[in-house]
Length: 193
Image (cartoon, rainbow, N blue to C red):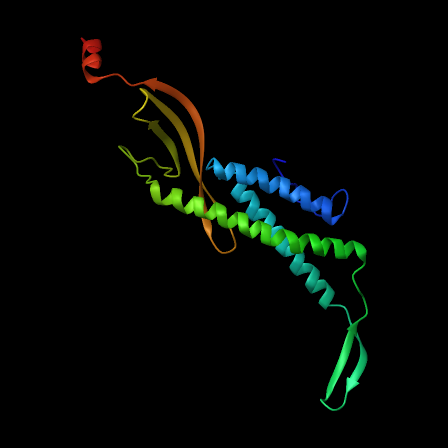
């Protein structure tokens, strides 16, 4: 499963086993992308799903806590009153709660894995302008070549920011433009004459 809908917990069948395997299939795809060092879009999607699930958990708890309670007993020796909730989760809400409790640590584990790759890549890449500095410093072109082949690839890039509540990440969106064959200097001089 390549993507996970934003409302994956509540769409179709609300069944813990079904949603568990749905999530695990998605996370397997994410892990495969991370193995290939492909962070975009899986890392930003993971963060979005994690925020959605934690918000669902927090909102459910806040909603549950806002219901009134009924006095159930009194402990006169310790001067305590015991209360019970008037409402209780039905089986559907218990399934949703189980899905949430299972999915949060799964998302955290994969986000941590993606952050390690992101931090490693960020520590190895240095982006600096060469020549005339453009007005828009977050977009431009870069040349990519390796020592093994004689080809230089030209890409257009845009640097964007995607956020986690705790951190900001930079994303480098690229689009392939064309390739040029590298020629030795002697061959290039002969070509100019």
